[in-house]
Every structure is written in structure tokens, then in C-alpha cells.
Image (cartoon, rainbow, N blue to C red; front, side, top):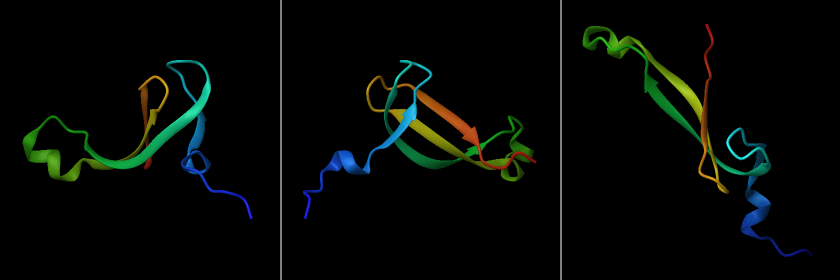
Length: 66
């Protein structure tokens, strides 16, 4: 039986900021895309946000590209 470490759970991704394959913290975030208050409730979209553990660089990808 092998020992389990926190590093086993890291998501390795290519980082645009530092240019390396590094661990990333990944989350889903709801973002409002409209600057107009009257349309804001209809313009919320889910984004996949990844933050590089090594350099802190962050990238966001819209999940619904309709």
C-alpha cells in the first residue's frame, strides 16, 4: 500500500504566466458579464478558474460558449 500525499491531488496544467506544467487550484465561479444593472441577473455564466500554485497566475474559461 502506498502513502497518499496532498501532491497526489494536484491538477497539473500548463501555465501561461510561468510557462511550465505546474499544480493548479481549480474552481467554478459564476461571473456577471453585463455592465448594465437591469441585465445583470440574466448575464451570469459559469467559468472554470485555474490558479497556478507556483506563480499565482490565473486563467478563466467560460463554460457555456453559446
